[in-house]
Length: 285
Image (cartoon, rainbow, N blue to C red; front, side, top):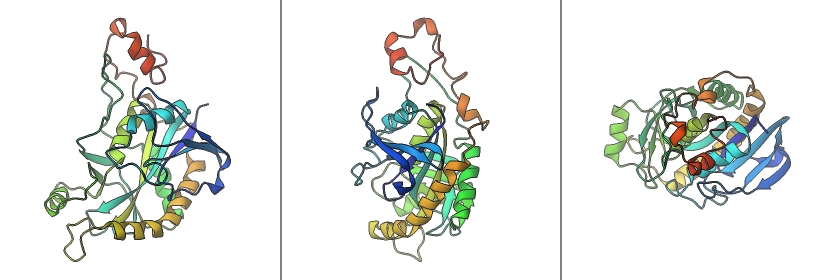
């Protein structure tokens, strides 16, 4: 199957009651097990696959998520687009809690997670100057506004390692860099989606002002969860509205990211590497 849309988020963010013909599919990948079973079916006439990135019940910290297995699993299920939803802290006064941001840039502050499918006998360098699919970002912006969310299109997402929140010094540093929101998951997903030639965009739901803002208390889990619960309904409406808007015939560089990226000579490419990455490189000589 091709053209399926991947939905990636927390089980509280997406209401599966609108999905018809739900099936639970557990996958094995060359990179291990994904966070949980994928829930597949149809939504608004489109084939979809949902995955809870932290596992159902929120069992996995950002550093424990097997990002490679998650994205590879979407590829095995025939997904050519992933629409993500996640919580973020705001680094800008104008990006208030309960707002939504559709970022178009990332800064990488992760340290402890694999973030490429390549290596071990095969080298590839994908273009990542524009890490978010513009076609999917436009769909998310329109859908979020329709859902009643105050929505900001564009901006820079700092992806930190976690699981701890920022120090005040870090928070002020990221603001000085010109960053807009901060989270712990989306950049790693975007990198791997690009290597898998899967379009990717994210709905970043602002839960707090991080800890830079002296007028508010430092971020706490209790405050984040309270705002997340408030945002959940609008987030579900946004993702449901986004699915039928995704154009199967969209033209974007995401879908051909590997065309000139693999630089390893096919003559020295090992059978192990060919087998491991077969779904990503079906036409590789």
